[in-house]
Image 1 (tube, rainbow, N blue to C red):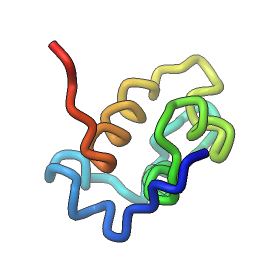
Image 2 (image 1 turned 90 degrees about the vertical axis):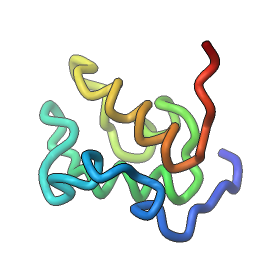
Image 3 (image 1 turned 120 degrees about the vertical axis):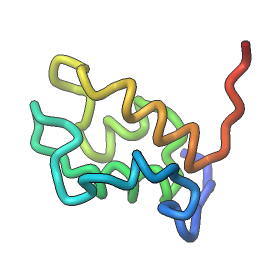
Image 4 (image 1 turned 180 degrees about the horizontal axis):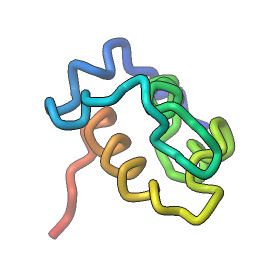
Length: 81
């Protein structure tokens, strides 16, 4: 994993993604949203890296889009059209 540490990850998120920080983002594995944000802020830049750290997305994968969006925002990844 690369050392892409982000000091204030919540500052990079739009307001809608700052909601429900204390709730589970991954329902299958009961992974809180802040655990996913912390993993990303500490250098995870792919869904696989987030999964290896938190187990989020390793159930039925319904939270994968949310994890991808958090990675894009926190690491300021531009989407290619």
